[in-house]
Image (cartoon, rainbow, N blue to C red):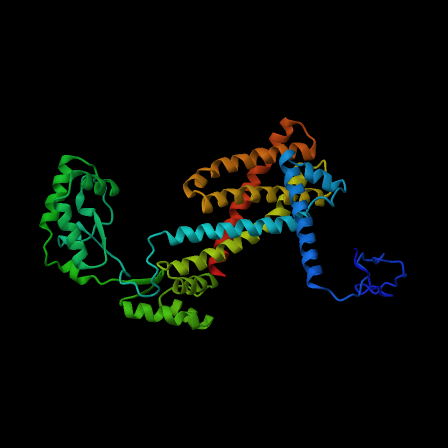
Length: 407
């Protein structure tokens, strides 16, 4: 039995005067009913709205898959009620895409070898010495001799760790020595390997060069500290520094007191790149910045289409097409991310190349169906627009990464 309406003389939504026979407002469409809402009504309203949204999404995706570019053409012809509005759909799909992308990056960080300690690492500060220095000679900065092993440098964090590496190399297999020689662009033959073993054997255990060098704990460029205590104390103070204090630190260490250096010093001091939590925060900031960049890319792409596919003279026509295309791309990428996260990471990673190829093919077909030009013209114009699009996307993404880190 249908529920009886308790009618009002005016619309509760827009104050439009209603007649006794009006079940719905002729002005805004709201139901003319002042009966108190029941929980059942709220539940029915929720599922009605959910069904309507799901139906529109299905119609939108189906039209996009069956015939690329068809949805844009029908939308511009006025057949819009069956589809989700372009911008609304893009915002929903892009939110899902970046949500999955953030999840994948978090999984990668969690499975990495990063130790997760914040400001408590014992392995801060690195030093380097060449074999020539360890033998008591001056360091050679330039060397054209591809057989000279004295220029080989070793990075180390403590005297004992370096001495252990040197001792192991004296008895190491030839393949290990060859790898070291190749890294230093030195010839790998019997003579150079023998020279390297002899040089290593001559390095004294009591080594003045090794004893005289102290580690430098670097924050940003010239801003370095000689002790771990000073380094950690500085990193703990930086979050409370104002711009004037940061400029003072930069000037004291010989750096320019610019906005860029100030931001870099602050971020390099705050973020600990040996902390998983810190890297996750940084990654989330960069992904958020990139998502905004992709939103900016759409009106720029529409301008590019307007210049190349001038047959459609109105800007909004190109903008609708651009929004639809980027939405489909994000749907494809979201499916790949779903496979990587929830099914098989290795298998999903192998699909990325094919997904980009699929997107390019889809774009060409969509251009052909939407702009009604020959295959030859469509492919030629696709190539023509790909160059400025790629350059613009690269520049904006790079700026987004920098902005996400700094700001």
